[in-house]
Image 1 (cartoon, rainbow, N blue to C red):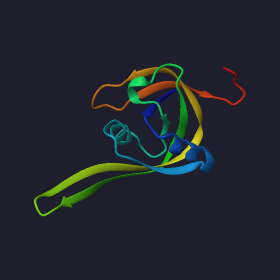
Image 2: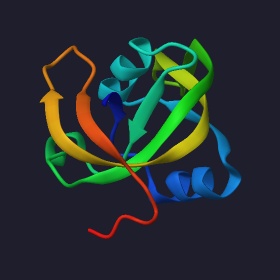
Image 3: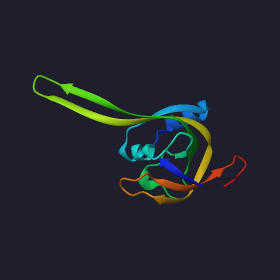
Length: 129
């Protein structure tokens, strides 16, 4: 099955999702933000701690269903006596529900400006590989 990928997710976040079964994460990195824009509520996505450039056949990760999605902008202001700097950052908040685990069969795309997609097989606990 094909999944949109969220890569480089910390092990702490993945373990928390495994334990709690539902977790809200914030996406700020540009490649994952593009993936978030391509998803809708109800979609099942693939999350891995592996960086985007290292995704290859055999990489494992978590599959999760998107329960809620919010896109927002944060404004950050930093100033001193000498300068004033303002920046705006877009981010996505996704509430995820654990569905299981999967192993990548092949990476389908990783073009700049597009969501990363993998073809992955769901892993069952009794599979021994």
